[in-house]
Amino acid sequence: MRAVRVLLPVLRPMAGRDGHRRGGMLLAAALLRCSSPHWAPRRPQPLERRLAWGAEAVALSRAAVFRMRSGAPGLLARSLALHAQLLLQAGRYEEALAAAEDSLTAPDAHVPSQRTAFGHLMKAHALARLDRADEALVAARHSVADYRSAVPRRAGRPLGSAAAALRAQAWVLGRTGRTAESVTVYFECAGLLRGLSVWRQARLVVLQARVLAELIGGLRELGRFGEAAAVGDDFRERVPPFVPWLNPEARLLRAASLIDLAWCLGAGGDLPGARAAAEESVACCRALRVSDPAVGDSVLVLALDALAHHLDRLDAHAEERVVREELVAAYEQLAVTDPGEHGPGLAAALDSLARCHTRDGEGAESVAVTERGVELYRRAVARDPRLYEGELARTLCNLSVRRRVADDATGATAAAHEGLAITRRLAESGGDEVRPLVADRLRILGRARYRAADGEGAAACFEEAETVLRELMESGDPGTHEAGLAAAQSALAKALGAAADGHLDAGRTDDAVAALRRLRELTGRTALTDVHAGCVSAFARSRDRDAEGTGEAWRRTTGEPWPSFVYRLG
Image (tube, rainbow, N blue to C red; front, top):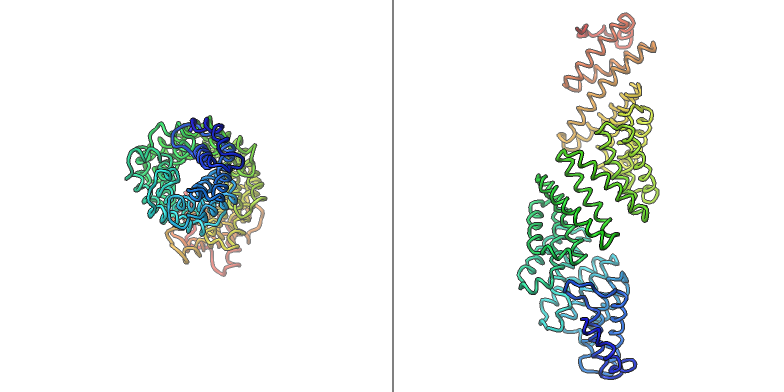
């Protein structure tokens, strides 16, 4: 290609002004050669220069068609299709679509060929980028059909391949949420690539990397973790180690595939393998940062998150904390340039780091880090409430737990109350999957109130949580909520006992008896040993403190004598 670039100054005089001479087609072909992507691992010319060459080739080809030069229609169709590819790389999707459609209306485009197949392929990519997925899928299928029916020609080899068309079809299916169909097409594409000659596979090695990386991602989304691990092994075998180091896109694909592979191995129970894959992805991303810092940083945070998660599962908490601190630092750097895009990621990273502080007994640091995350989520909610309100509620409840551990009962109650209010609103707006979270967050608020010595307020939260869980058990799978119900009832027993003690301290004997009645009713709804033991203890404490007053109040409010099963402990 370098030799062709050297010849351009020689060919221009042969083309004449506006390409009116016969040398115009030769110059157009040379310009196409210079602007086309080359398979060899070498640094391409700047995109702006290649766009200029492509536009000039299109103009010369049009002039040749106007003068009815032999072979000019095919050259024009090829020029337009390749120019559409360059426009796609530049993010000029509307112009790319127009160029691709023009290539398909060239004078000889009525016969399926590699040129028409490539035109449909570029059209599919442009339509997908413009969020016209249904039309993109039609174009991708046309491309596959044309590649299969076209007679291969040496001059058309740079114009894509049937494998590239299948990959486009699978990619568009994935964008529309049809992941299972997408994975099926990816497998077909991978099989087609595997059947090619070694020389042909070498020319399409980046396409192989792209197909296998996207296939691993699709299998992960479908929960087919074992198949994803097998495809990961195939990736290592079919994409030589030197390719990612020579090609930035292949390096990015390798990093992405390793991240997905780590999650799949972890989900399949192979935690050491998941850790190894995550560590490899981190190393790959750090190398990518050298050639492309913006892309490298954006992928590095995903790799660090996967590594930290699996270190946590392996109980390697000291190493996990180091990785989470690096993850926060990486997100902070990204958030400086684009806070809207990376602020929520930083908030999630801070919440995870706060968990490490809590585990290490650093309560104040844990609270401070979580508060930073809450503020970042508040800003995200201001931009997009639908997307981030749930995360804000979750982080507020985490803040409540961490404040309670740090003996800030008032702050814990405020955070839990706000988190519960948001969760209720989300549940009322039709989110059935949010209703179990209402029960969980009622228990968090109840524990905060219990720590604040508000026994009645805590009991009200736990009673409502019990009601919500019983309704969920009646309408769904009871086993899903049994543990939550037991936790709510155990906490309710403690809260009612504390409420009775508080009322007696304040001289409110009737209120104390009311709390004891609710506690006895609870023992009729559950067989939990700790609930029955708590009930016995609460009644015994009340009788020890004021046997006459509580006995009289009990008779007055219930019409029954003091329960006969109450006895002195010890």
